[in-house]
Image 1 (cartoon, one colour):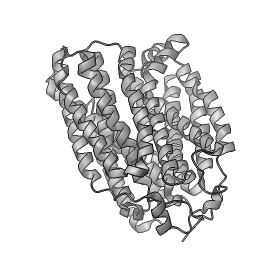
Image 2: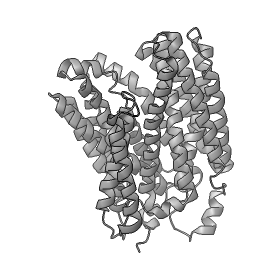
Image 3: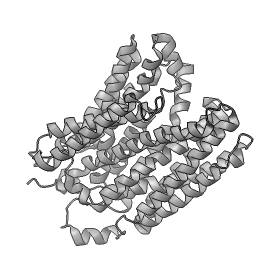
Image 4: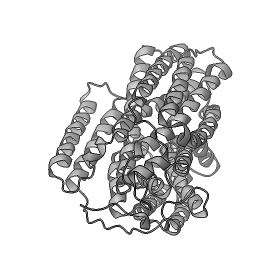
Length: 490
């Protein structure tokens, strides 16, 4: 049995929040998270220009977006385990190199097929990066206020990345070229690689484990197939072979993955013992629900602004900016409150804001004004998201040994991404059926209002599940009870 890395893996142990080293590490992980989330949306506004220049088919153009999202979600669990086995600095740097190189190829691509292949490679790079950033936070920052603040900043960076996509994509496409949507990542990636090499400690673990190949293949292929099937459901019925085929194949592969991990793997990619940790099991279930809730906020309010109120894409992005700013501020505040208030109170407060905000938003109609119909409820929802998301991420990874930080980071982000994909498919179906084929603003508003009511139901489920999370104990007390002096916080 291998032992977890000791505090010697980080000179002086986990860093405190106010040291220069801590600020450099935090800036690095936040910039990485911002970049990978930004690239999931920045290309959307540029798609018409891409199509004109490269001559995509309608089905092929969608893969400029889907190729990235599919590999991003499908490979995150593998990326997290790789960070645990081969070292966080090594995997984070490898992810940055792959992401930046793929961005360069995408920006220079002369053919549609090459652009799609580059986007697929970008997704793999992002899947290495994203769980590594969580692992770095979990092992680099002392438990309590320093780690909570780091989670808050990391959450805010991802939220800003998601919201900045439309504005940044439009500005780069209009001012320069769609190719700069990808090329901008190259110099940024080069700077982040230099920072990673300087700021992160090298790997000094005694681990002799090898990568679980059977688990990696079945787990990654199963996740990718399941998410692909779910993604196809927005264009085809749930009973369509196009949806059922990959979805069923994905479920069978994930069942095989579970058997491999439980019975055959000497060093499993996802040690099932981790799922016996209550925070891990409950937290990941809540992240599935949260993914659907977040997609209802950012995606469907954008559609409401454009399809019901008649805003352009750029105007819709500006219309959501106050909510994005609110989310950033509240996420940082939640991080400061978490060590004192505990997980459950913040989850319940956030769920109450989500429930009230979505209930209010579900009253919006085609003749509703922006200030009272959209701005008010979205600010309340953004408050709920800011309270809930960093708290959930901290709770899901809190009781995990340092040697498994990357694996749990990958699992947590996979749960959120899968929840978003499933939520988008379910909510889009609900909106279409409620609108009953109508395309008028009033008919579409009725469909979106149904989406917001379902999201309110998700908020209730998150609140109920939050009661199952472990009760909060002060971080210092927990460290004294469970750890010898000098050990990494669990």
